[in-house]
Amino acid sequence: MIYGINVLLYLKYVVAILLLLAIFFAPAYLAGLTGKSKYDALRTRCGSWLFGWTIIGWIYALFVSSSKKK
Image 1 (cartoon, rainbow, N blue to C red):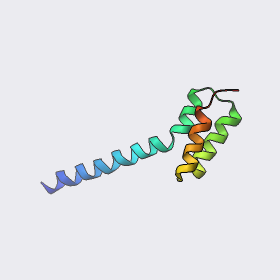
Image 2: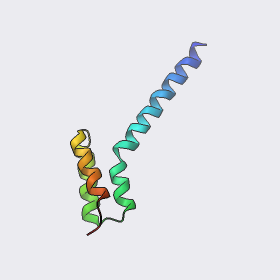
Image 3: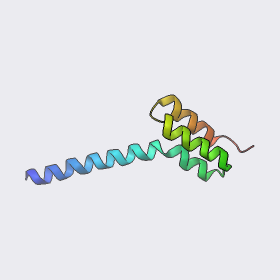
Image 4: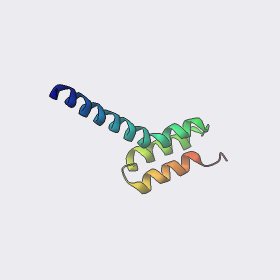
């Protein structure tokens, strides 16, 4: 019985980590979907990966990735 509980606990942590990674990489994915130039996509990826651990850096990357193409 304890074995089943441990598997569910590990599964819960794996799902939580995958969800957090999906949220963390959302700006880079969004930049690819909106058809940004290579420079803007690179700027979004670098901003998200380097400063994404701060809320301000992640919001900046999300803003750059979702802004209209010039």
